[in-house]
Structures are given as C-alpha cells and as structure tokens.
Image (cartoon, rainbow, N blue to C red):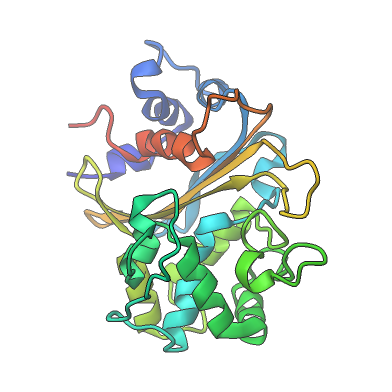
Length: 289
C-alpha cells in the first residue's frame, strides 16, 4: 500500500482526507474545510515530506504555527533523548512508583521508558528532569533550539525542573517543533544514535490503516496558565506530533490547537483528545485502496 496517495496531497484532497465522513461531495480547494474541522479552535497542522524535503501541507490562520505555547507532554520526547544520551536511563530502566495515587490507574505502578512515553507519566518526567539538572537541560535546549529555552518554571516558585514544560515558562511554536523533529529524524542533533532510536521506538503507536508505521506523542494543558495564577485559564491546549514511515515514504507531522472560548463545564476532554482524532483522519487513508 502506497501512503503517497494519502499523504502527498493537494489542498483539495487534504480537505477530503481531513474531514472524511464530514466532507461534502465536492470540497472547496482552500482552507474552508480545515476551518470547519477546527471550528472553535485556533489550530496549526504541518506535514513535512522528509524525502522531498518540503512541506506538503500547512494550515494555521493568523500565524498560528508561529505562536509559542507550552509543549506539555510532547516535552517527553526531548527529555527522553537527553536521558538516554546521558545514560541516566536505558531500555531496562524501571522507574519505581512512590505509592502516590493518581487519577489515572496506569500511573499507579512502576514504569519503564516505554510506558513513560506511551501512558504519558508526568511523575517520571519529574524524576528524570532533576536527575539531569538545569545546566545539562539548558545546554540541550540550546542545542535543540527548543522554543524560548526558558526552563525557570512558575514565577517565584523555583520549580522549573518539575513544571517548566507544564503550561509554564517553556514555550515552543509548531514550526519550532517541526524543526526539532526534523533534526531528530535526520540524526542532526548532538546525540547518540541509540538515544534517538530508543526514544523513537518508545513513540511507536502502531500502524495506520495503510500499513505505515506511526510514531507520535500527544500533549495537553491549559493555555498560558501557571500554577501561581489566581484565575487559571480554562482554555485547553493540545498537541500531537510525530513521524510516519512506510512504503518508502517518510513524513514529520506537527499539530496543535487551543480553545477560542472556555469549554462547557461538562466538557472534560483534554486538548489532545480533541486533536488526535482530527490528525488521524489526515494520516489515515480515507479513499485510496
């Protein structure tokens, strides 16, 4: 199966692929259908063809793709690269659970580097980052050109090593995420091949409908909110970033969104839970057989 038919798409076929069953019989060859799919959100979607070395899809009204927001759990990708490269962890590492009870049952157990990534275990990140320390993390962020490089955390809290990436000081744009992931895939970062391969392997989410392998990481949080804020934001941020590879094709994708208005009180979906199905509609084959 050739994922080229799905992923190397014009604006017309991209709109159809994005909307799937929502698409009209004839989709307009512009951003109209993207606007409908992302209705109620400020959003960005980028699809980069690694082989052709060019963007093949781009959506981001109002310079959204340049806007920096907190990376939230997508920061597990660079943090994993750092930890493997420094040999703080390896494939056999076990992160011991402290016994603290969390709302998600999968967090209440010992973890591995893979489960850390797959189940998005915040407490593991909050163990790993202090092991690296400010100096090493700061150097890596600079080498990675990772957003605003600000690992200070919440104002006056001195909590960067546990909170900087969680709706806090560290901010990154979709374009910057794309450049970071492109460099990671090309082995152009100052990292061992093992660090990249181990991290990439732990991002593996299985196959798309067309048989291509999907590697990804979601992230979710509150928009421009810090724990010190007296009136925390109710606007949700969501990320879904990663790679697609198969049939000789190779892509990097980056997507994010933010609510335009606060959600209803009974709407408890995280931003990533809203975003990921939309992106999967793009990445999955909709019409080609």
